Structures are given as C-alpha cells and as structure tokens.
Length: 81
Image 1 (cartoon, rainbow, N blue to C red):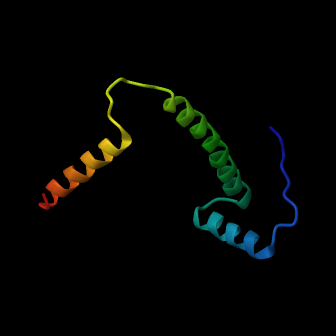
Image 2: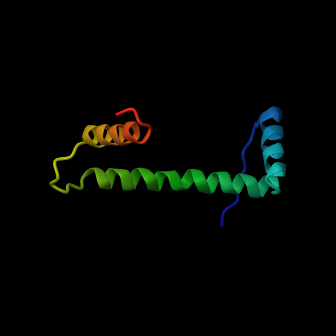
Image 3: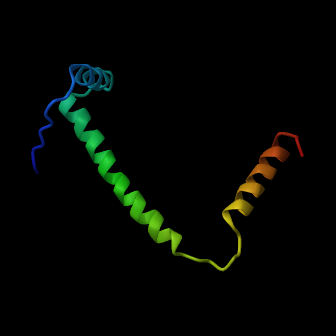
C-alpha cells in the first residue's frame, strides 16, 4: 500500500472531517480511507455505465417509455389514474 499526504487542508475542513469520523466511531485516518475508497469506486461506475450504453436488447423501449410507465404505475397506486 501507499501513503498519501494532503497539504494545506483548512482547519475548519479538518475539524468537520474529524467530527464526522468521531460520530462514525472511526479514526480520522480510517474515515478518510473509506472516503477515498468510495470515491475511487465511482470511476468503475462510469465504466459500467459506458459499457451498458452500448448494449441493445431490441425491445425498442426508450428511457422516456420506461419513465412514463413508472409514472403511470405510481399514479394508479395512489388512486390518481
């Protein structure tokens, strides 16, 4: 593993992060490691979304069709249809 160092962190930012870590029952280092790991995992999400964008199923259903169906189902469920 590698060590990272962040310079010039404003005191109020450090204090806010330390408070969040304490509320989560973590050290500041452990809390920040979790933040960094989560952030890094987001890049995988972009790759997956880009790959899925190229998939076709041949249904002809568009995102608008799906949203309209969802809105209609919600309206029916709430007696608004």
